Image (cartoon, rainbow, N blue to C red; front, top):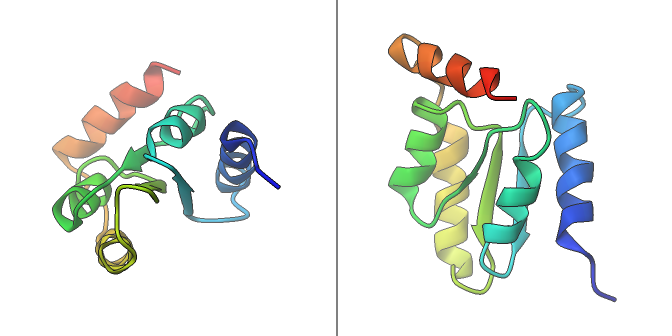
Length: 107
């Protein structure tokens, strides 16, 4: 049967925020709906990525903790490359930490 993506987003996001998971990966058709839903949970920085550069920057500059991918718009090999890029990158901190802290203040 089908799964409502807000339910999957909430479940994964809550587990990331609780510390059970360090990161999450979420997929829906375009990745848009699931990223919007995940970002409603305080403490989540979900990034919809359609290429490796965006995935690296999501970690390097935004300290993203959930990677979102559009399953209907991203082929499986590209999705693997995006995932590898996301998980091989680290948050750079510095001026980016100041910005991420400002994002957190919006919660």
